[in-house]
Length: 135
Image (cartoon, rainbow, N blue to C red; front, side, top):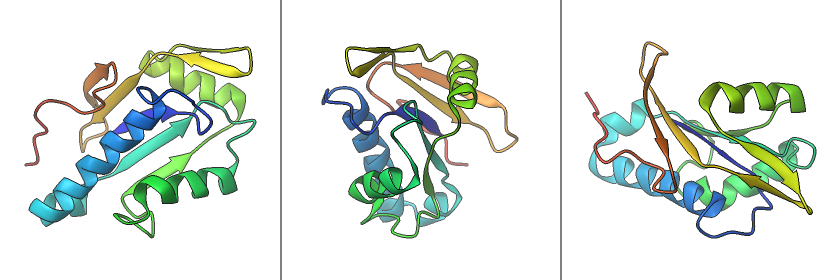
């Protein structure tokens, strides 16, 4: 699964909620279905690559994944160049624009099948599909 955030997002129902949702998903799988957790790969992509450098993303990631995945084996926090970030966001239908020191953005979570194809896309801040098929 993948989603988009930026680490300075001040809105609790946006990036913070998305990160919390991914954390809850990972925690639940780790506790209830370890085999599924073993196959889980979460990817959080920053839409603020000018600020969200590796050290910033590492710190942010420890806040959300530190107790679940301390070695970041199942959950990665990444950024790219501004051009790469825009291409990824556009590909997955995420809109964002800098405005008054913040980034105004939509929300998108994507479920990628093991074969690399998009299995589902979700808009909004639920951040997780109602049913995640683990087989």
